[in-house]
Image (cartoon, rainbow, N blue to C red; front, top):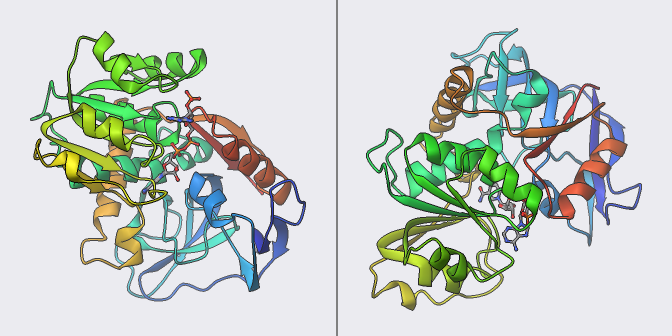
Length: 337
Ligand SMILES: NC(=O)c1ccc[n+]([C@@H]2O[C@H](COP(=O)([O-])OP(=O)(O)OC[C@H]3O[C@@H](n4cnc5c(N)ncnc54)[C@H](OP(=O)(O)O)[C@@H]3O)[C@@H](O)[C@H]2O)c1
């Protein structure tokens, strides 16, 4: 099979940072599906795993954790899928990623893709949808069916991959959404996705919240730098509110300011269930199935804004370079081999 991978961790402008490879076809056993990958998307996790360092891999490492494709074969214990099924998934960070023509993935992490989206537009969504769904509903305890209607969510980083689906999912749950964006095009994108208000993260967030006539917000999903916005989040969170972080801190943070408000800070890491094989890892199958149904019902729209063809090392280097600029609007997908 064709694949794109690395053995050395190099800056993305080095042609050896991601290279075209020919590898043996993998064979599914147990609960694994063998998926023929039709389209993929890129995420900051790819560039973080690829960050330049002296380490050298003995065998090629395959990145990529956002895919849509067709089930080619199944392991003996697979019960939920058959060859020919069109599926989408993010997968497992401890295994080879989806930057290959064929990929093994545990069926509990997979669902049928939305019928109304082609492969590229579908591949843009699984990782960020799982992140947002788990963050809002599993970690922060918001009710997906509207019992928290009217509560306010501040979403830091509204126009990126996470923010773009986060705005939509939060609106679907009935929340009032304040997204942050620093440019005219990212502000317009957030409003187009349904954000009730957009404030500028290039200015102190407190100013933007004051300008809206608010003192606090009940929920904060920080899809940007946890350390950078820590003090602002502690200030802006309402008494008994909840803050969710999805990005590693750059150093220790002081949790004391949260005590007077009995406020909570929670982490979301989309790979936890797969990495630790938690007993509830099939939840990712259920979440992706529910998101697919919402897409097919017209309640959620794809976040894909651009598609590169074909999937090869040159186009993946372009995609990683774009991500590293930190100015993505929605998601960049790649399609075809
Ligand atoms: N824990 C998890 O499971 C998980 C899952 C997914 C992602 N993540 C992490 O979450 C982060 C965001 O992911 P993503 O896919 O949304 O990234 P992304 O698509 O690359 O985000 C790009 C967006 O970031 C915004 N941005 C740039 N500087 C900012 C700042 N100082 N403050 C707020 N926003 C800023 C930009 O908006 P403007 O152009 O308007 O400034 C741009 O639209 C990454 O660090 C990623 O690794 C974690």
